[in-house]
Length: 593
Image (cartoon, rainbow, N blue to C red):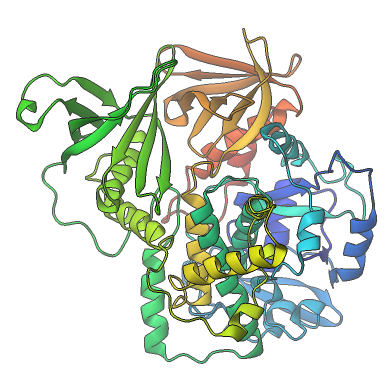
C-alpha cells in the first residue's frame, strides 16, 4: 500500500528492471520478485481513481539508475537532488549488518540509503515499516477474489521477464505491483532484510485479509494478534528507536538465525546427534480412507513410519507380520486439518497412484504426536527421511505454530484503555465478521477484540522483527500456501480445470473445490516445452508420463516461466558466487533463447 515513483530503463528486460528496483530499495534476491499489473475488479466499472490517488501519495526517487561496476561492493544511484546515495553490495558475503536485528531499524544513517529523497524524511527506511489498515471501509473497497477461478485470473497480470517494459506497453507513470512471484524465499536474514521481510509480511497479511488463502478461525485470531502486536511495535519503534545492549541483540540474532525461513527448512545451529540409523516412528494412529457413500469412521492401527513409508498393522503384536495397509508418501500431498479447541489433529494425505490420487486421513491423539508425524510426512513427501537435519526444526516449528493458537485458560484482566486501540474489523477477514451478522455490531466488536487480546498473550513477548518472521512462517504453514493457480484445459479433458504450480510440483485441481486430482513432482521431470502455435504446454516426467494442457485465460508463456523460474531458484546455494546467472534464468524461462 505504499506508492513509490522510481525511474527504470524502459528498454531493459523486466528481470533486469526488477533487479534494479530491488537494488534501489535494498531488497536482496530480486529473482524472487516480479512486476504484476493491478487486477481489475470485474464487478466494478473501470476507475482511475486509485491510480490518481497513488500519484498524489507517491514518494519520488529522482535520477537514472546506474548499474555498479563488477569490482565494487557499493551501488551508486544518482544524481539525487545534487547528492549520491548508496546501498551496500547485495551479494557480498562480508556484508555488514544494515539493520538492528531486534526491531529492524537501520544501523547506518538514513541519508546513506535514500539521500534527500522523500523516502528519508522522518522515518528511517520507510519501506521497512508496516502500515496498519486504517479503516474497515478501505478494506471493504479492495478487490477480493470470490472463487478459485478469480484467483487464477489475477495471474494474467504478470509481466514477461524476458521482454522489456516498452515491449509490454508499460506507460510512463503506470502503477505496477512489486510482488513476490515465486514462493521460495532464500536466506531470509533479519540483519540485512528488514525491507524484504516487511514486503513479505505485507504480502502475506493482504493474502489473509483479502481471503486469497484459506485459514481456520483459530489461525485467523493468531494472525490478527500478530498484526496487532506488529502495528503497536511499529508505532513504538518509529517514535523511539530502542537501544538494546549487544548481549540482547546477539541472543535475538541467534534465535532468529535458527528461525531462518526456507521452504525446505533451514539448517539450524543445533545439529542432530550422530545418526547411524534412520529414526522411526511407531504408535497407535487412527486411519480413515474416505469412500463415496460410506460413513465408516476412523479405525485405530499400530502404525510404523520407516524411511518414506507408513505400514499399518491391526495391533502392536502383529507388527512383525504382513501389514494390513502400506503407503509410500514420496510425492504425496500433505494437508493439515487441525482444530485446537476441538482437539482435532488430522493429517490428510493424497498419495499418487496410476489412476489419480488415493486419499488417506490420519488422526493423532495430541499435539506432540501430531507434530512428529506431520513433520515426517512433509519430509517423506519430498523424498527425505527423518534422518534429515531439518526434521527436528520442522517438529519445533509445528509445535510453536500450534502453541500460538492456544487460548489462555486464565486470561489476565485486560485494562479498559487497551481495547480502545484495537480495530478488529481491520485485523480479521470479512468472512469472520459475517459469521456474527445477526449479532449487534458492538457485541461482535467486543467479542472479536477479546479473542484477539487472548491470542495476543501468546505473542506479546516477541520483538518486532521476530513477530513478522513468525507471521510469514505461519503463512507458510497454511495448506494452500505457495500455489499459483491457472485455468487450463488438459489434453483429453472436456471441461476447464485448474493447474497449480508450487516450488516443487505441478498439481491438477478440481476448479470448483480446489481438491488435488493428481500431483507431479519437478524432481521427476525430464523436460518441458511449449507448442507456441497452439499454445500447449507439455511436461514429460519419468516412467513415460506426459502432461499436456492449454491455458485458457493466460498466455502459456506465463506458465512456462513459472516452471522454469522455480527450477532456476532450486539451483541456488549458500556457497555460490554472489552474482545471479541472468543468462541461465532466460534459458530456463524465455522458451526461445
